Length: 495
Figure 1 (cartoon, rainbow, N blue to C red):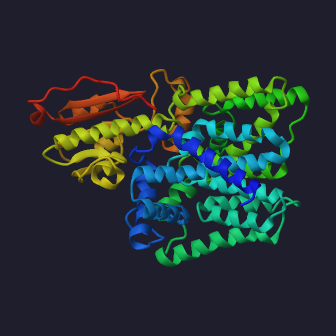
Figure 2 (cartoon, rainbow, N blue to C red):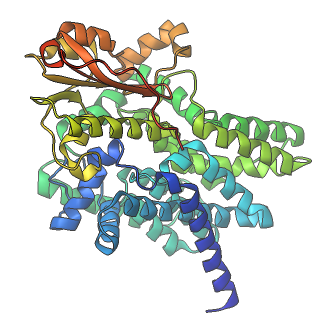
């Protein structure tokens, strides 16, 4: 091994070790939300049965590369949450190294600054150890662009094929690059052929091209044919790319730098990928989740870093932006947002851990009525919340309409916050936005816990709250008569 190779290996190992250390308190957390809903069981189906199309969870058409990767990690080290998390952090390290590689021709020795700011972004930091698709895709896309810039066309095409076999939406990258004369190459047909082959296999095995008809309706049909929804989704995507979760400070400083210097042209390939991701995910996707833009966000932050480094006293500006990004790990915005966009997801997991422990210690006489993901957390021990399955009756959600559909009298009811709801909600002052969210994005506020308990004549027997989230266990008045409602108490602090 030459000196140069040894230095690269040492740098990669150092980046990975730093990420593992930074995520140390999170490594043993049970699985969260979509991890629990799909990716863990898809990986287990590969590990246990060799199934590329999952059977133990609803098959939705996602290609199997991440599932195969997770199955390999579990085969080597055992099926444990910490194995999953350290395996996913390898993708985060790959993203950091790819950003440095892509930035090196433009930023020289300062290329590591771009990698640092990307990894400090709250969305990136939160997603780094979660078993989900978008951060691995971001790593593969960034490395593909870096090698493409170096004239290595086949490695670029191979990495984009791997990205498409990780998540089908990555196909927009080679399609976008084919529009650029400087990138146009028959080699870029390889990733398109790879994803096409997967869909042919999926259709042959299931009879569907993309998951079930319900999955198609939710993610494509309801979105792609609604101009009003597309316009609002586009505004949300622009916000998520340039202004969300502390990134707005980086964008503002970069914009000021461009105004001072009247410069700031972005490479055409970066621009093509960013525009493709923003436009595509404004048209397609039932859930307008920020993580879908991770490949575009990484490139955006790289370009912003380049502009900031051109300022006088650039180190001070970089330090200020880094501080704002780190603060975004813990600070929640004054409007509802998905817990997975920063470390709010840690609070969610710990609240649900505590509730599962309370239910295991004193199981109710009948099934626990609750909504997903708690229904899976209590009934599937693989997710890390319970040691043995508890009886569960799943309800759709906690909205008034769902409450009216409940038939029977629950013996136990587990209620919890499914979306972050601040005490001073900025969106409450925007009734037009509330109405648009309800009409175009299916938003419906949950009925208050007191309403649920009053309807079914239940009383709280255990509750916990913290960080703008809460969880509550109620039982029927007859069953809970000997018990006294526990006072609200804070959950363990977020890491």
